[in-house]
Length: 62
Ligand code: SF4
Image 1 (cartoon, rainbow, N blue to C red):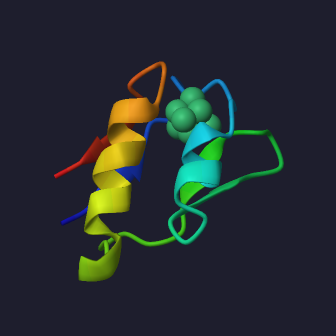
Image 2: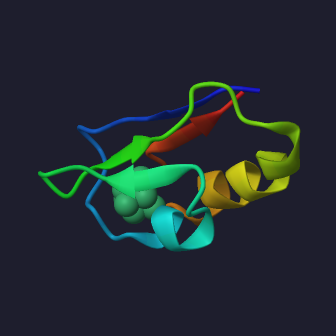
Image 3: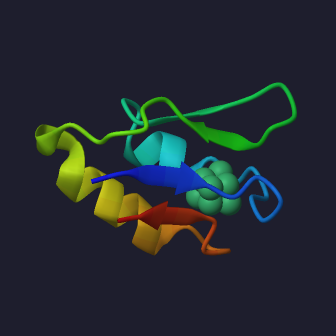
């Protein structure tokens, strides 16, 4: 399972960071970045939750 963030779409709301502190952080421009490319199995549910919670659908988990 891989996770990516579309920085062009991200509005920096921090929801993904607060949902999955192990998977996301904000960069210097207040855009979310994924801390990993491949999601560890124990974080799979969290990654899916972040994908759903993002208000602008900037997160893709596949
Ligand atoms: S939840 Fe979406 S819009 Fe909010 S910081 Fe994360 S990627 Fe950006």
